[in-house]
Amino acid sequence: MTGDAPSAGTGSPAGVSPAAGPVPSARPASPDETPRPYRPGELALSAEEMRAAGHHAVDLVVQRLCTAADGPPHAVAGPAELQTLLGEPLPEDGGDLTGLLDHIAQDVLPLGIRFDHPRCFAFVPTTGNYPAVLADLLSTAHLSVPGAWLVGSGPTRVELTALDWLKELLGLPGHWGGLFVSGGSVANLTALAAARDHHLGGDLTGARLYCSTQAHPSVARAVHLLGLGRDQLVALEPDAGQRLDPRDLAARLDADLGAGLRPFAVVATVGTTGTGAVDPVTDLARLCRRHGLWLHVDGAHGAAFALSARGHGLRDALGHADSLTFDPHKWLFQPYETGCVLVRDPELLRATFRMARHHLDTGYLHPAQARHDEVNLDDLGPQQSRGLRALKVWLSLKTFGAAAFRRAVDHGLRLSDHAAARITAHPDLDLTSTPGLGILTFRCRPPGSPTDPAAVDRLQQSVSDAVRATGEALLLTTRVRGRTVLRMCTINPATTTADIDATLALVARAAREAEPPRNISDRT
Picture 1 (cartoon, helix red, strand yellow):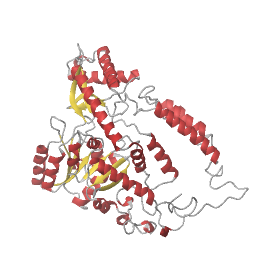
Picture 2: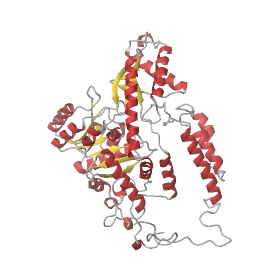
Picture 3: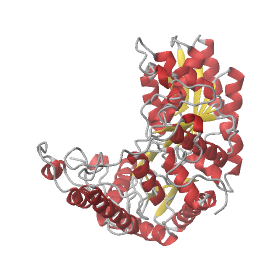
């Protein structure tokens, strides 16, 4: 054996400076003592019990992942049924862990949407992946907290590396920074908090933030949480392509400035939840620079388009933003909760969230302050105790490679193109929005269907309900230009064109078999 690596059980772990001090060895157990802390009865199980339950849990996970296409994509139970199933008194004494795992895996967790089912087209379905499952297991066992460097230097470095990889995937410059958060809602809140502080300081008088009516509701919620009134959020009607129109925005900015108001930020959406529309980010960035406004891009779903060959042009557009929301638990196929916020100038996050800014009298957290080139991620966002969400991204990218994720994004785009072509060719179906980032919308108009708009809306809802009732597919409705439409999101890598065709056949059959909806004038 060559090299100067320390022998097993001696020296420091790889990458740990000797200056950090020796790693303490475990105290040897006496012959009549079970090694601590695994003593049954003290919030712990024996090694044998842990291995048995752990092996069983892995079997349950593998079974779940290998049978994603089995059964219906959606299952639901009523409140009374679930109250009977789970509404029990506080258990004073413990039970068998293996049996409890079976109970949860078989009777409880399946009651919901099976987002990784190949015929689940609702919302933005995620698939997760097995390395990410193991990442959660390991990081939880290690109580990993990438908050302060002192508390979790290794976990923090994992997160910084994963952030670097995401920036590379999205084509963002290296000086950008940020952190992982629970999802798009907290990412939007985090970025807009920095925008508020940077542009408004502590005076919110007359402040205005702009978006389109197609923006995610979390934007309005962020406005509320940041101390702004709903009248300070200006939601503009979109153009014909469901995008925020720079001309309409420019006119509104001029009017508001003329009225003495204080515009400070614009939210552009890359991949609206309804139709997958992409706001013209470059044009909006130019307008924001002219007026000195912060441009936040909500790319929770659609920023992943930049991974694909046809989305390469988006990379330059994203670089014009001041901040970006990206959800790896959407089109990067990670389990929930794996969101991310990235900003052009990370110091603006630190100005808003750094712990030193918010210290009270206690010196409890002073020992954890960053020194020299250390990074405390809890200085960049609202959360101090943070799980190691980044390890899911790190481990799945290391396992599969970036190319696999690029192919998966391309696959979702091809599926939406295929669905659009089938809908366009079908005599009973009308495409209501062009495919946008793996999302498309359409309506059913079979022969003899009503012409009253409200009755046509009800037909779409009844078709969605009927398809869901078959247990063979799941697609829900949304509203486009004030009318109810059916919506498909086709990003699941396991979905095939045959799944698309079968689902559209179910839709067409349900529409023809639907009881003719009554016109409003026929109601009694």
